[in-house]
Length: 307
Image 1 (cartoon, rainbow, N blue to C red):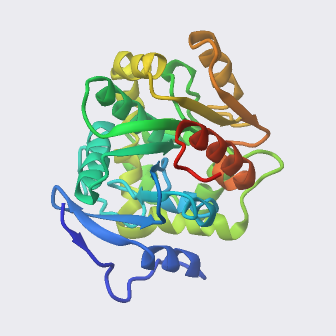
Image 2: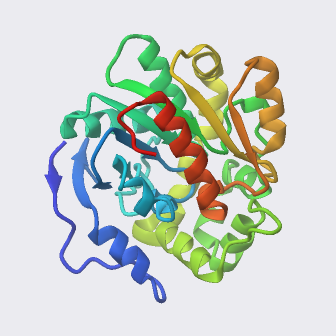
């Protein structure tokens, strides 16, 4: 991987998206297998790697960012097909490759141990990283915190739009989808009392739309089948890992909410789980509560973290 600065004058498409512009200006670009990859790195202390979800990007962490970087060396890339990173047409996107992107970035940055924070699509990346950790591969993970995501394929309840995107007509539907349909679909996975603002929905959509990203939605959705194919490896890693693990779960999430935690508590007795009265995006819907739960856990696992 080779690192470059952001493109001069780069801006996010769409109305009044100055927060996204500032987010990009605060990051940089590197290269992974011939593709430009955007990432943010800021702060000092033990490293924390933030792995975002589908269909959004590292900007998902922006409400946590100011507090996190006061205590930790925070690294947050946009994965292939997401956000400011390249979205190659016809690419065979995979969770395994996204895990390898993170490993390549950490090697470039000289990070040999870190804490993990994963959400949605990113929890599967985290599970692959845990599986490699169990095989003795670097880096060393000091802890892993998992927000809402499909940790158990059989408990995952995809939304109707996800099923359509995974079908043969998915590419057509993704190209025809506009901001209205996207916003309605995304809002339905938020909690009833913690709905996204109009500006947040505009920002989420702008990140998806950038660089042909609507087309990539149907190509990226293959992760649902990959989860089923990799179930033994990824669920095995989740249930047997010796890396300290905490769940922070928005229980009102219809996709991977309280029903998922209930089942995991059966499979992994003594599971450390924090339940919040929000939906699928706890870091957006309840950032103060997520920060408190995350920092308390990370500090307990690592004496070098300041609470």
